[in-house]
Image 1 (cartoon, rainbow, N blue to C red):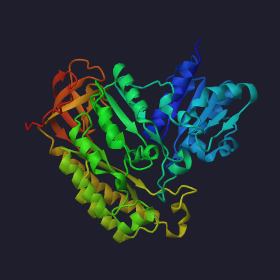
Image 2 (cartoon, rainbow, N blue to C red):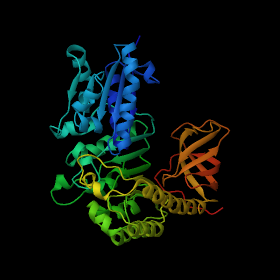
Image 3 (cartoon, rainbow, N blue to C red):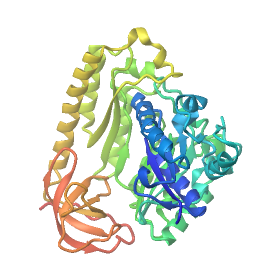
Image 4 (cartoon, helix red, strand yellow):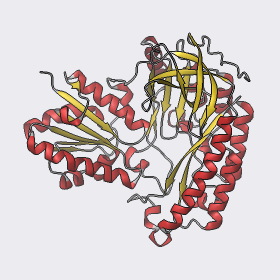
Length: 460
């Protein structure tokens, strides 16, 4: 009987992409995917360390696996990713039943380390930096994608920014950009395999290529090159940094229809004092001016953001300013987070300035109301419009509904009497809206919008 593996992923798209690579490596060694950890011979926990609850989730999962390991000593447990990079030997100290601990820079060695652990016993191998460019990029490894029609492409690893709250530079290292010709070749290969949507990944995609040229970013040129690849109908990217959003990137979004009209632009705070303490490199006014320029250039642009509530020292006045800027920005949606101190970051040391939890909770709820108000208003404005939707499959909550996304990354639920293959394009008229998704009626199944002409917005 084939040996089976199960991967549980915590965190961002970079981690999801790393998990695809780990799956590709394991399948290359003859393992097959299991539907749960209970059915697996190898369990991989690919971790995140951005927030404190990520630690809790990992050690909670390892606690459950301890009993499974006692019942099945042949079960192999791997901890990979950012928390492995950060905690290293601590994971083995807290969970001695773990067989392999592997970090962010040596994910390609997962299979080799498992084999070594079978011979020699538990292994902890963490590299502080990738040894060379070929080893820096998980995109150079085999891949087992979850869907056939969409793919992630890592364009850059690491981050050279030093935001006071963020541990990513410590666990992902310095910025290293992948050569553009390799990226375009990968996208061309993906298109030949039937992929119609790619998402370009990096910790700060806007600074892509700065290390290659030693002078300026190349992200706008990369967007244009990928958008021209035959067969690629949608190009997305995440995450950009507002301080590095350049006019040429906005121009590339505006002039290349394959680039989706969606911009994720993390604000974090609307207070200039807090932004300075965070080392974000922009003011609220500068942020709003760049957002205004993007909306002026890119038709029907959807904008999403990240926001942190309760950064150390945040006053009532600081938070009121955040509410004002969020209302002015009019986001389509936002990811809102309570400040989480991460050991080793500058902000974690500001313990005397931590905001009381009850104050943070009250602010968080007030922010949620403002965000959802603008999201609902923007979604209601789409009622009666015709949207081009890339079908993802049945709705998880209601299998009678089909689910897909617009170019703006808006989730749309609609009914269809016929089975629609994931990756199919459909025209849907929006009939109802909530703050988090749209509802609509299927008008027609359509071919890919060759040559990427966006479907006009039509009032109903």
